[in-house]
Structures are given as C-alpha cells and as structure tokens.
Image 1: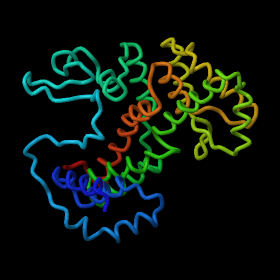
Image 2: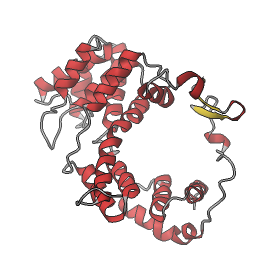
Image 3: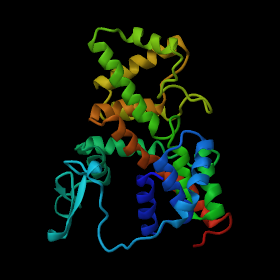
Length: 303
C-alpha cells in the first residue's frame, strides 16, 4: 500500500478518529476514480489498514520535505506563547483587531481584506444559509448523524456537498473560467468566440444554471450587495455579466450565485482554490445544522 496512505491512516488513528473516519482518510488519500476501484482498494488492503497502529501525541506532527512550503500559512511560536498566521501574530496582531472573515481569508489565500470587503463576504455567507433538509447533501448529513452521530454526519455531509456541481467548488471553477476567458481576450480572441467554442465542445460550465430548483433566488441579494459595497464595477464582475448576457441570449440560461460569488472574490484577489476553500466555510454551517439536528433526534433537544 502507498506509504502516504499508511502515514495518513496512522496520523488519523493517533488523533483518535473513528474506524469509519480512518477508512475515509485512507480512501481520500488513495483517491480511487470509481466506486468499484474504491471497494477493490479496501478489499486489497484491508488487512494492512487493520494492522495500522496508533502513535503517541507527544509532539507536533511532521511533514515530509516534499510537502513543506517555503512560506507556511501558520506556525506555533512557542517562545512567545503565540501563533503565526501569514507573518502576523494571532494573539498580538489579530485577536480583537481583525474579524473571523478577515483572518480566514488571510490564512486560506493570503488575501488581506479590508473591512468593507470582509463585511460583504459575511453578508454573502448569510445569503448561502439554506437549511432545508431536502437539499441532497443536508439529507445525507441528517441521515448519517441519526444513524451514527454528529461527527460522522458532518463528515458525510461535507463529503457529499464538496463536488464539482454543488457547494463551494463551482465558485472556484467559475473563477478559473474567468481566468481562461481573460487569457483568451489578451490574445484577441473575442468572448463570443471562446464561449461558442465551449458550446461546440459540449462543456458544462460552472456558475450557470440551476437544474433542480430553477433560477437562483439568491442572485437578487448578491446584485444588491455588490452595488451597495461598490463591487459591481470590477473587471471580473463585468466579465461575468458579459458571460451571463451571452448565455441568456444563446441558451436561455442565467448566471447563478456561485458565478456571482466567484466574480466578486476574483476582484478581491482570491485564487480559484482559495475561493473554493473559503466558501466551504459557508456550506459547512448548513451541514452542521442538519447533522446536529439528526444527532439529537426528532424529539426534544438533548445531548
């Protein structure tokens, strides 16, 4: 079995993860392409996985040299009893001075948000708080939590919502689409030509349409917030509006809130991966809501 799988399983065991969570760590590290390959992996390596031993939490975990970066997002400052985040001290420089949203953006993508942009992202986060249990990933979170507890419900809900078509990933994918379109425009390839080519190839573009529920009811609030915070004049926002206009006329499909979010975050300086990671914070809350509700049962709340 791949050494990376073994090491990650050992770390998960050392942290006290449940057997189901440990198995999830193994599969997420191996990343089988199909369900059949996932089952085959477990059958092939089951004995090795079962033989893994828990280590001791007597020191900080270490990374292989290949995974270490020249500039890490954070580190413990033992001598000063503090922690560093992107060159800033958590307790001395950030606590009481920066909002959670600002610290999250700084840690995730190195983006130093001003107060207005941080406030806008907080409002946009509220706009994503859809708690209806009939939303598929939330349904999974509720079911799993009811069967095996809060922690498993959270993991299952996140594993379900983090896919190419739901939750946070479409935000980053739309941002990446804007990068590609901008690169084409820099080579004097018109926007219409680029988008017609995507239609010809039969590509399913992120940030457009909403198959299950129709037009995105969150869009109106995003447009209002973008205007109110002066973010509707950015180059990415304008490019997104041009993409929306093209597909509205060509296919009768409109941009959705993920596309709008991606455009706003690109103008703030986020990368595609950073935008996806940050927006995962938004979608974590509905998952936790349903996992907590499922773990408590349908009766009166109790721990």
